[in-house]
Image 1 (tube, helix red, strand yellow):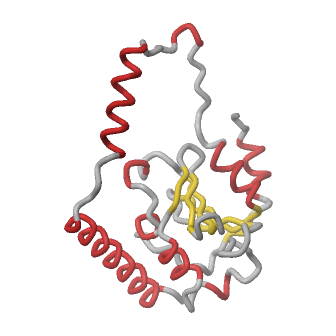
Image 2: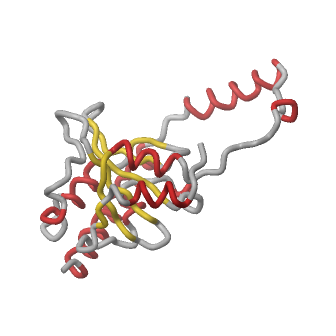
Length: 186
């Protein structure tokens, strides 16, 4: 679904720009927004869900679980939370009514109704206008190859060392986030 710039502006009128909330340069990385998508989306939303007790990201094309500890550290930081008290971004007990929206180009952060934010992120992408007759279809043999690759990827269990490295990386980015907030937040 495509919307006009006028319609997008009308959606943004329903949001609140969180001018007093500092936006760390590593926010997306800290919230575990995948780096392979980090160059595409202008807008990405973040919120918390009780389903799995997780933080979530959504850029309208890709959504998934983020780092719940980093999300909570950010929204509950002493220099951030006081600017977010009018919003409900979700919790362990219930789905929130609002979402954070990050404009990754301007580094502005907004808060707004979940439905409005979802519409903004989902309509930032151009609709595929490829005629159906030009869409390539896979043969059954090609589908089997694709499924074999997916199953091989899914069945790979990380080693203890790989898990330790990932934990250390997450800890490092969390420390960078908190250090930045403590130094730069007003």
